[in-house]
Length: 367
Image (cartoon, rainbow, N blue to C red; front, side, top):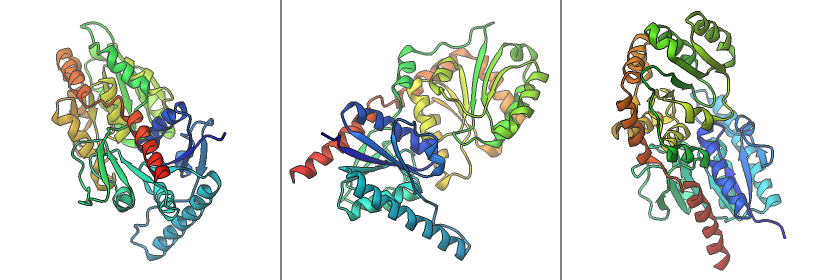
């Protein structure tokens, strides 16, 4: 007997893809077959063992009229591809995880009268999910308070948290060990799943300005853009910094387990992984994120004392060096932040989402 299928539609960044993968893992264990739909950017993040359909997608917003028409055409192609996927795969339901590649699959699902659930990872609703919300039977959010949710009683709203792989929750259960007086200080520096140029410019300069005694203790893992690797490596070597430089971190859980302090963006997945692992962080929101949702994410952690919000416009090398030096010299402060951020962990988020979508399909079958 063929396994029942569920389509998981997600935008092409880690903030959308990784939560979808977490739910997909649970569905597989429950005897279901997840089918992922994303764009070309997201396709390389989907492991080969999963079924994945790559569709055309784009934001319809553009100041140029012809560019707007072109993007609408691409969305139309994505809708046709999504409809064909539904006809061939015969899914029982569709879960949209945000991003414009999720728009066409959700619209196609509504056309076929399939149950639709949305998941919003950020503390501020993205444009795609705001557009799709009225077409969904259920909206799952990551935060108790999420900006931009319309007052529409036809859509049930539940708070599940952001799905995170079990390995990160295991780190949180193990606890946090702060740096010792003369021991190594381990920094994990991550510019997001697609990289960030400022993390390859300002951060190495800040590290170079740290006191020599601290530089000798540093153990860095630094994700930077491919084109910046050599320049960053030379900067660290010149300053005698023990650093691993990479364009992509395959095993983020292992690196986070070893970290005393994380310097990163404030995307939904990054924030959820920090909460699950219980790791203090300097959060630098991407300033051009849609509706500034990364600042909203970072503010949630900052407000509970689980990390420190650092707007990019305020992230000079000198100020960042001062913050790193002050925090690494205060193990008690790091430990308090690690404890506080654990309050946001939602270890059952992936299971809850999977159970909700399976319940939706059962309800539809019964009716």
